[in-house]
Every structure is written in structure tokens, then in C-alpha cells.
Image 1 (tube, rainbow, N blue to C red):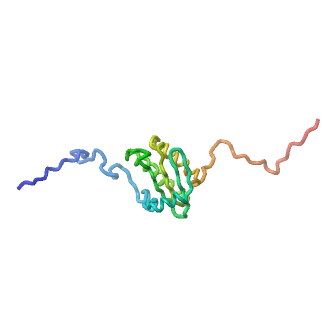
Image 2 (cartoon, helix red, strand yellow):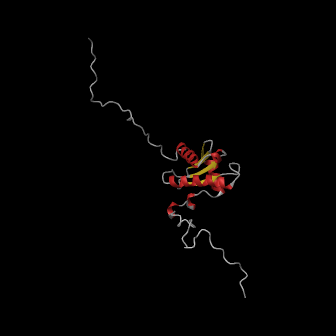
Image 3 (cartoon, rainbow, N blue to C red):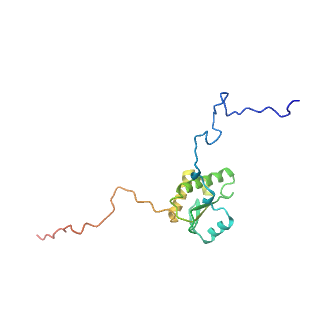
Length: 174
């Protein structure tokens, strides 16, 4: 007898020549993410006990957008994120904030000091664009001492005393 299931609907993302019109996967989009570039479980603060320990014993550095709690426990740098519904009632907005912060942490992880980092987003973070979030997070990392201070960039040479062998101007008394 006949099959009671409906006939399959062709995928609208694939043309009749079976060449994808839009990427169906990361590979089709030309995005290649190696295993080392991903945000691995070892780089996360996940357990409530660990969050509590960072909040209780860590040092806090804050800005209007974010608060950074850092606990130097000697372990590799790990990130925990807290973005509540008070920050943004929409999951899309909360996920955007977390995605931007996670990505920046992943790229800076090799330069960071050891320890657990927990970032608490504040309502101002929802209004900030991605560059604003990155900038605020970087400033917090510098202020917390998690990143080495950037070298001063400028056109003037640093001030230095004159060499000891340089003769001083003789005093003229005319």
C-alpha cells in the first residue's frame, strides 16, 4: 500500500543544481574553528561553589557596564559569566553580551594572569554595542592587574638625564 507520510519538502537553501545558495554549516560558510580556538570546558567557571568562592574571596573591579571578580588561585585562567534578566529581558540580548565577552576572553587568555574571572553584566551593557563591551572588559582587565600594562606609545622619547661625561656650561661673568 501507499506510504502515509507526506513527501519530503525540498530544502530551499539548495538550488536545483545542488549548489548551496547559503551555507548550511560552518564548513560551508568558510568558518574554520580549530579545537584550540574553541572556548573549552577547562576555561570556564561553572560550578556554583566556584562562583561563590570567587565572589567571597576575589577582588572586585567595576565599571558602569560590568563588574569583574578575580580570584588568583594559581590555576589556568577561567571565565564565568552572570547576565541576568534584569540586564536584558530578552535572551538574544543576554546571549550577545555573553558571546562578546567569551570571545574576548578566549583571545586574551594566553596573556591573562592565572585565576578565576567572573564577569557580572549590569543593565548598561544591554545598550552598549559589541565594541563598547570589548572596550569596557579590556579596561577592567587592565585595572584589575590581569593584563600587563600597555607600553606608552607616543612621539617623544622618554626623559633621561644627560650623560655624566657631558661638560656643564661654564659660568660667564662679564
